[in-house]
Length: 524
Image 1: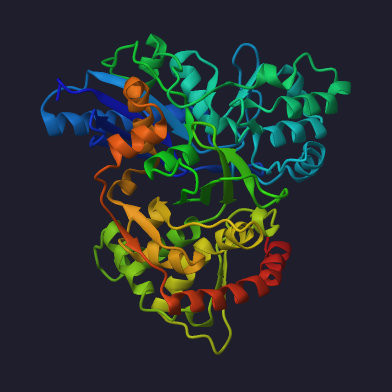
Image 2: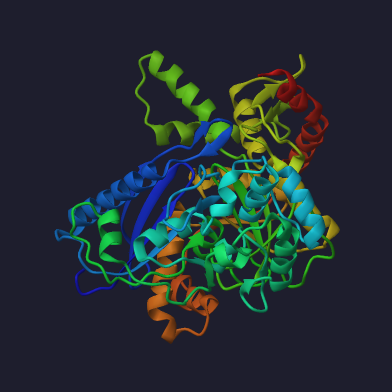
């Protein structure tokens, strides 16, 4: 192995920090990880930055141990590093790098007033998760820290800065902070001016462009690992400085890379704690839709993003409950075995979930107009309650909100897709998540064998592309010729009965919104 080039991708996901090491043929050779969870403190979904570094070190250590166990040698010759993380949110710092406010993640839906003002002013949809919405809301709320902001970034941008000293961001992640002009691969100059004009009377010493990270596209050099950064990542001190880093990206961008979905008319669905679809567009949308985010690929191509805050958290909680009951009866069933058994049981259920209804809204859901959420299951006396239908309704509710957003693209904008690539935890059990999503969207869904490594693998590919960009004209060329030329996977076509059943479930789902609204109002 010491004769091969190795590239590291580390991704800070919502529930797991994962590190993946690949060789110069882009094959995974070692991996590591660390489980973590967001905190809900004082009404804010957040992570503490100390936890970021504890998780980063634990992930790197477990990857190094995995590598040593596999190859009988220490991990010493990494040739490129990629950092990626959950997109959006708010991380402001002053001129001395002091954190000015709690890290607000994508899960927060507390910026509605700001998004209404900004969307109307810009003529461009600004979702509640975006960094510009959070800083605008802080201004509206007269938060004192705003005047002291010297730099704000995303989680990936923060980690990259601490590793390299470079205040930069990949264009895909940057497009979740502020609108991007794909003609320049930079922040939209007109909209920057609109924002500065909007807050001119506040007397801030900064303009927005001054406090945003510099934008870079995939394949551009984003700095090198410093001695201080090496110690932050590897507590043992074995990791040496000087390793080049590619631009830090969001999980949406690494998901597109991991599924080879960066070309026009390509699309992928990432399904984990949240769920989102990324559709690379051939043309601009005809109008602004509050349910559709306009972001970019890691090379700056325009992408329609349907992002839903809630996917697998409620499902995970129920499976945890079933596992606890199983253990109570003296059984010792592994976590993966429990997931596989219950997921496959869902395929035995009625196509319409037997009349059951479920909302997986652990947090608010902007796509359906909920600022807060309450997970719930409802049924009538005539509903067919059994384990298969219960598991099926949990899976269907995990993708239901995505279906509503995708209907806008397919029905109002006539966007057509030949296939969607799926990745993330919902697809780990072979065939089940694919079949449910294919029924929900009435589109074939494919999952590649590499999907289990997800965004961390996609990030490692970006690090390899930085190293090998002289050989390939574009990222698309690198992925199609180098990475996916012989890729294997499975494809599932929509089943007609499944599609009809899911449509029936969706009618019930939309009609039941009043139940969810009542739960939010009265369940405290």
